[in-house]
Image (cartoon, rainbow, N blue to C red; front, side):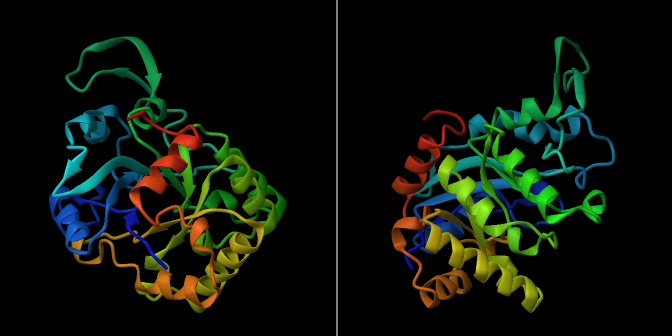
Length: 267
């Protein structure tokens, strides 16, 4: 399976990741990748105080070169899903003060401020105490509601959310909306449970059978894992996944899919 875009990666800004943007981009270039998505965590796991000042990293993304070391660079985020309604982190955090302490004439929600500056968002589940007793129908509806968010392009690492949902219903929703289901390298490369890996395989199989496009994310938290797609490539080859359904087969395809979905900042 040809994969030339890695659209779920982390830098030191994510706090439990260990490489800079440039280190990640250099690694992508060395692997012959055409496009790298920088998707640091937008999540309560970063800071105890959920203020704009603590998330100002996301406010200056336009200084990042569009092409760096020959790699097309997109700036996004991995945003947490925070409740069964499908709300995303920051949806209810009011920002009324700038990063230098001045009062804003028009307060905004933190989520709107950050997501509106991103090329796209990967929506994922990390903390999930709020979903422990959720039914499959509730979780399915939650993910469908997430897809309603105009900034979300990708549902991240579904296979290891530990939540039950209707795979076919969600795959069809993503297909019909032109949005993507991620096949996550770290689920395999970092030795997650066989049950989670089997679930990822089942999701990939249903995407192939139902005609839903997928994305590739290394979910790398260090540069040495950027653009390494060996496990995902083997999986997709084993199930004879159609190459035309891989949105990350080259930069042009990913950008076209993103544009068609109406997600992010026009370029």
